[in-house]
Length: 268
Image 1: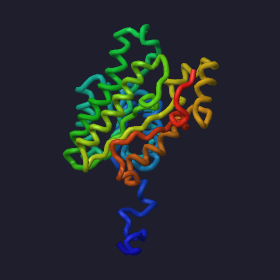
Image 2: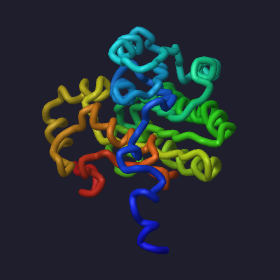
Image 3: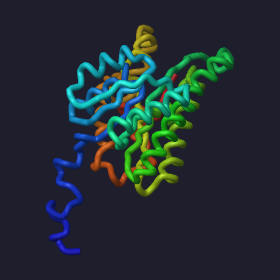
Image 4: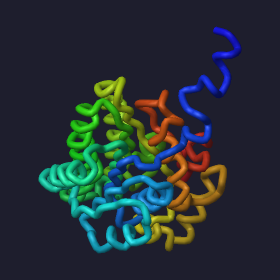
């Protein structure tokens, strides 16, 4: 290989185009609030065609109202397979393809294992794990058929570290991480599947527990940056995983945790 082969002119993409998501048909579940809302707004601002899916259509419509690029709101409860199949059908009718998919649904019930009701366990599993799989499978069919696509599943730093009172949530996120790896292996080489593993982010899911000042101070001081993340801080990593900039990455979980895992995780 000569030096000429290493010049920008011979790269697969010009550097300023590597992070381009303009025109990409991007499905975002959970777009009404939290990380889903931030991702939908971020991709919309960069010219992506955004499909905002959520059971809370009023919230999704509020998000869509801030997006100037082409977009569409679809009512979707990830517990219902029919809703997800309808989401795929409507997306294909409007845009003919799916380039990027963010599978984000997530809830939490923070209780010690011995106090967690079986019904609560089932509820967390059905949304966080089964819901992600339903979305991944139905949208994955399209991506595999079109032989292209980037799928990003929302995992968590709790797929890597341990914290009490998180048994259901952590179990689902660890499973999502492993699901991501298996799907990446099955759908290669044309479809890439990765995950993002955030720490605590200042979303509606977390703000209620942030009111416990002692817990908040103890927890935020356990990562290097000494703070929780802001929802918009997931947008940059999301663009990276969705774009050509990460085209050699699949089966990977990108930790977005302020260095929490690096410091060893939770300390009582």
